[in-house]
Each structure stands twice: as C-alpha cells, then as structure tokens.
Image (tube, rainbow, N blue to C red; front, side, top):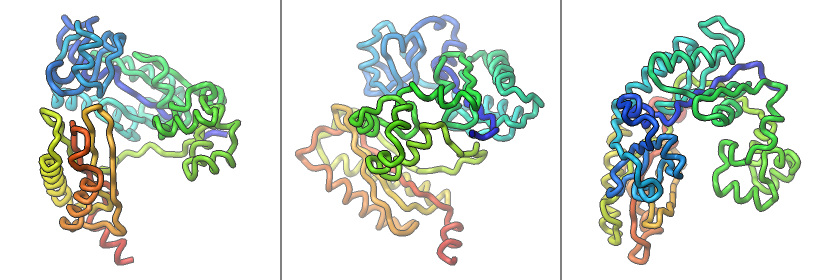
Length: 356
C-alpha cells in the first residue's frame, strides 16, 4: 500500500539551549532561555526542556518568558556558533547517505533506503546515528522512521527528547488515526478551526468525513488532506533546496503609532531585499508585507504578478499600495514590519520560459 522507501527524520533536541548547556556544564539541569533579555523586546529562540516545563516556548516574547519562569537563565544567541555545529552535523549525516534534505540548521530528512553503512534495518541506522551524534557532538537528537516524510516527521516528535519512533508500512494508518489533525503539515490554527467546526478533531475523522465532503468544504486542499489522513505522501527527499523567498523584518524598539515612520522602514527592508534579489540574479513573482501589532496579532498581505520580473518600480508600487490599504492613523500601534519576495526563479530560467 505504501512505498518501500525508508525515510528518517532527525530533529536536534532544544538545539541552541542544548549547545549552551553542553558548553557550560553549570547550566545543565537549569532552565536556559536563548533569546533577548527579559527587559528587551526580543523573542525566545529556544528554551531548554527545564524552561519548557514552565510553559516557555520558541517565538514567545522574552518578557512573557520571564513572567512564566523568573528563575530562567537568559542567554543571548550565538548564531554563528550554532550554524557551524549544524553544518557539521549535516555533513555527518551525508557520510551515511547523500540523500539529505536539511530543513534548518538542526533538522533534516534522510532517505536511508540504501545507505553507506550497508544496513537494511532503518531503526538500526537511526540508532547508530543517534549514538554517534551524542559521542561526537555531546548533543541528543530525536528520530522518526517511516515510509514517507510526513509520517517520519510526526513520529520524531512523539518521544522527545532523545526519542526513536519507527512506524513500519503496516502500522501507518493505525499510528495516525488518533493523532490531532494539527499534526498534519499545512493544518494551521485557521484550518484546524474549520476542521473542528465539522467535528473533525483526529486524523481518523478526516477519513470518515470522506473525499467528497473534504473537497466540498476545503477546496483543493481537501484532496491533499484526505490523502495525508491515510499517510500518503509521495514527496522525495530533495538534496538541493531552492530558496523560496528573500526578505527581512524589523522589530521596533518602541511600538510605532506613526504610519509614515513604519512606511519608511518598509521601504528600507524592500531596498535591502531587492539588492539581494539582483545580487543572486533572481526574478520574483510575489511581494508580501507582514505587520505585527502591539497585541502580537499579525497580518500578512501579498500581491502576485502575472510574470516574474525585476522591475523595482512595479515592486515598490505594489508593496506601498498593500501598506496604505491596511495601515493608517487609526491602526493599532505596530510592533514589527516585514517584507519578502517569493515565487523566485533564476533570470536564465525566466528567459528560457519566455522563449518557449
């Protein structure tokens, strides 16, 4: 029923904070919070499991984290250090198989159907990698093994930290049946709310709802949702990852009530991102702006063009129209503004497409 592929998903446990605890043994067993200071407007990058026990989570404001865990030890991130270790770990994975798809500096898919260890049992391959990571880097990683990427990713999250969950072909449907629908990639808060309104709370409920109803209620995503509920995910492990977007964002030192100042910041972000677009010889089809208000509510708006291009005036006009449509003097104070290009193609690719 399912593919014979053996996909391994590896996710480092509380990566940034684990590195800080490893580098400074005095921090072991203590609630470590990597991010800005509690008095700043920064956010939590990673929290150790000791801090998570108090409710501290990634992307939470550091001020909120301090309220939940005043005994927490706040450490400013050393991103270059973390990235270097992450890169070394990825190279370590590639010694086992060339089919490695990094998702971030601390997370990756590996296709271990065939591997350099010559071992057919994927659980054994995963165990060897976990032990080697611990020996070489002094860190733990959680692993999930399954016939495809979706199930492997879900399974790696089931026994964190330092877990290993193997879901063979014959167990996929049973494994998924009683899990929350939020476990499915692409089911965010809004989609979850729609599903809940239809009395769909577990993945097995999607199967009972049926394909026709999924298409009727959820459009084109309904078909994907229905297939994923059965554990069907044909996506291969991709060695090379094309950049999907270029962008930047800034958090203001104080919430901004002046739309004109926010508009200038948006233009600055656009200019920086546009320079990168040209430097990388890319063309874009979509521009997006992101606005976060003082209550942490966030809106994202985008405009897609008919064609890929590099026309600066067209881009700038589009983003300023988006901004002016949604922000004026009556808007709540703004905490963060962001901009991004997406739908990227190399200039050469665009020329070829235009020619054909």
